[in-house]
Image (cartoon, rainbow, N blue to C red; front, side, top):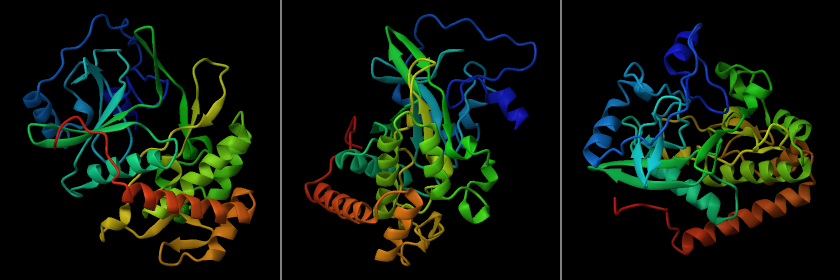
Length: 310
């Protein structure tokens, strides 16, 4: 991990930057980086599997967790550019992975669906460069004001609970929903509001068939300013994992005791309500409302934000 931080720790998730001993943070970047044309961006996307986050290529030092290839970038006049040294990235590129073709498109749809039914999810746009489709995601841990970008502090639930990433799944000893709701009540400035947002998120993941909603896919976010309140971060990494037979059907965190979508029954919603510390009638009613809203949004022809026709 420390060798990775030496190579990539200059622009990680949240507000921290990690530099080798004796190396000082570079001065704030001046000017703007040169936007990439389609050919250059396509070539960069093709290099990502071999050179994650452009490690070792000089310039920006970037690091993000997750199984998918990602590249933190900035937008200059609406076009993608690699950040200058010390410049905070503002967006993420997530190309289609070779192993799971269609995954990025799936995420684009699920994020748009979440926003369509009123959930707080990250903004994302479907784009393409010389035939290489990718998802452009706006980072929620950045705040722009007066031509400057501020890094915002965040912790995923596993970090906040002191659980290493190799135990992020409940079956491996990681957090369960009861732990997550307890954490949120302890940390959030407005626990009642944030708890209901997490209830919605858990139900929505069940509706779309996302079995990979583990503790590192939920985050605490401190809004602008050191004394600002902590909230549940916008939802991200929303994917209908049931679309791929080779992916595990087991929920990363059991839902009211149900380990898979096929096991789910009405009683599990009541048990989930107990884990969440909210009333069972509310959870049943909310699950029905969200399911109806999802069906309605799809029936009306859900539109995924996109730059071009790819």
